[in-house]
Image 1: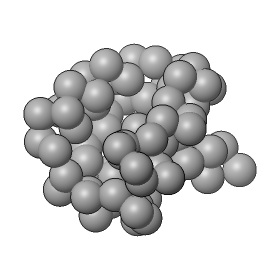
Image 2: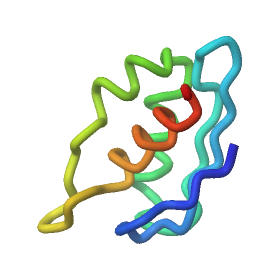
Image 3: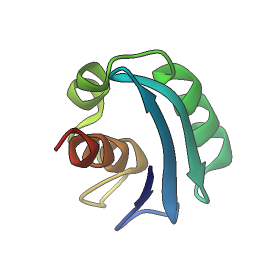
Amino acid sequence: MIYKTSGVCCSDIDIEIENDIVKKVVFNGGCAGNAAGLSKLVAGMKVEDVIEKLEGTKCGRKATSCPDQLSKALKEWRK
């Protein structure tokens, strides 16, 4: 799935999920090192666990962040 982000530097997030497990995450744009690290950390995790850990994370004074946007994408996928 490709999720169009809002309020963050990355333009979208490309997510592969199989059997409720996050297989691969690619952030397009944004902070390359942080995005790559986050992508490696969540690979192999259950969708619910990623949502629980990342939901509500903020970036500075922004109301959201790339991790928060990932949680929103996963919640949308879950519907």
